[in-house]
Image (cartoon, rainbow, N blue to C red; front, side):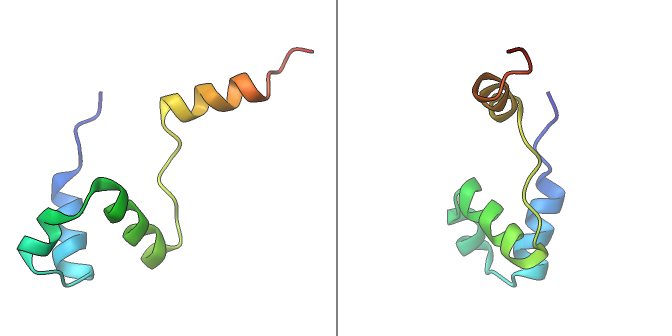
Amino acid sequence: MTPFPWREAIGFGLGVLKLPPDQFWRMTPRELAYAIEAVTGRRAPLDRDGFAALMKRYPDER
């Protein structure tokens, strides 16, 4: 499992969004992800559960 990228998350929240530390720490991971998406225009990569759900919904076999 890949550890959470705290350095990048804190840098983005405090440096890019200019949030005060207490406001950053009150954000949920989902709120932070949406903020990153809004600023960069990119979504987070698909995780394992999301990929499994897509495979189940759209199987390769007929």
